[in-house]
Amino acid sequence: SLNADTALTDARAFIHFLDAQQAVNPRRPMGTCGYCMGGPIMMRTAAHFPDRVGAGASFHGGGLATDKPDSPHLLVPKMRAHLLIAIAANDDQREPNAKVLLREAFDQAKIPAEIEVYAGTKHGWCPPDAAVYDEEQAEKAWARLLATLQAI
Image (tube, rainbow, N blue to C red; front, side, top):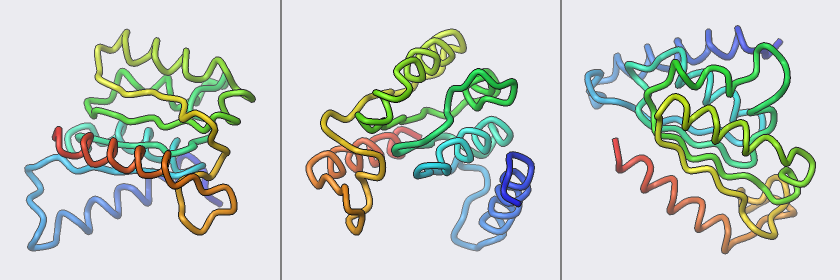
């Protein structure tokens, strides 16, 4: 039952929950990230909650830029967040135009985004328990995530 609508329902609930926590300052922007199908969820969250989401990251995200009318890249003009889009090399081979569509969308919206294909990586390279884990590239992506979050 997970789809674009239910992902936003969940995102709204998560943000509401976090904002109710004593340790959270709801006047400060938050960051969000997603792996694989979490990439589009992160982008939709950033677009639908631009007053709350100041940074986001997608690691080997799928379906970030498609030819469908609900493609996440079409939501970029609604965002204010600085995004990191870390693309697996084999995902880029399957969808070489995705990074181009993403770059065009962010440039047109004048929103900062770091979009990079991580050389030699396979889809799922970031989690240490993945069969295709690439420690060097995962550490690089983690460092870029921390820098992206520091920027907010």
